[in-house]
Length: 404
Ligand code: NIG
Ligand code: FE
Image 1 (cartoon, rainbow, N blue to C red):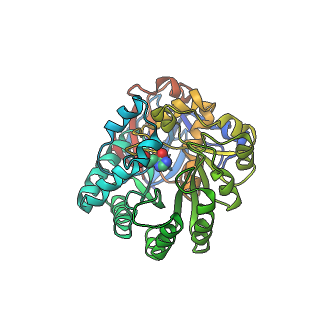
Image 2: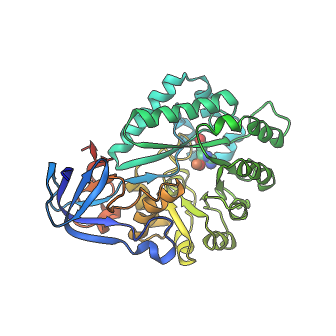
Image 3: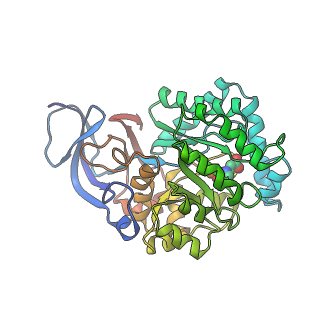
């Protein structure tokens, strides 16, 4: 066999201990290989070792560090429009929820997305994916939820599908019709029933659904029957849970056997323990805590209680205009109590698990997808310290250098 590419001289090749889900103390047990070469064939990792098998192309990566490409398992792509003014309003004392309740916030982006043409929504989001690739991201989740009606929700799902096929990153869609309660319905129940009326069409694009389960949005009593019906239709379930108030979303995630409970910054100890003892992945989003100037979820407590923890950006125009995984990891280490090793497992193997891709993504192992990020660091341990420097040398996606 002749390899397509051989990346030679890597100082450190760093990979989580095993495929996701990785729990508790095991999250910090990274596998580290020193001074090795990585061979790639047909988009897959085909060789890791000290030999130099025959290859059509050789890339010199002398002394550099390789990690699995970052997997952002929670963003709100596709969107269009800016909410920069809202950011300033919050600095003047208005809260995220107040702004949303007065018709801004999520509703402001809903207006932009509803009125944007499909081509505009595609082009604006494509630009974001190109930027994300430069930051070492190789797979990204995106959600609907800025449409809140059948046509506009399906428009976003079509855009996600088209984004997936028009550029190198894998784009994984989620249905978030239950993102906010729009005008024109008598009750939340009536709106959620309306969403259920077109989920068969949604199913053509995705098998995963999410809900903003939050005090003042969809409370657990609204969310539970809705999510149960989605589950019965074969959807994997995720929840925005216990974000701004302790609202019961985390416990509901466990009760329903959800894939993930995301945010959790307001979750109490009992909720965190319940999640940690279950198969639900806690997706921590410290960029949102930073951007909204809120508290940070207790990642160390979840891990001490043997939980499964993933990290993601929550990149969206309102609560977190940040997609940089290095910054998110810096925040996770500084404020969520994660060790750098845990942050790496959280952004790779465990994020792959949330997206149902752990069998082929999130590790640097023979047979896995050749999605890598190559960093100019002495060691991976410098990552949270060097996060804002120009350290990304290359992003490799399915064996091709897509940035760098
Ligand atoms: O995860 N919390 C709900 N949804 C997003 C924010 C979306 C927006 O503000 O546009 C979040 O923070
Ligand atoms: Fe979110």
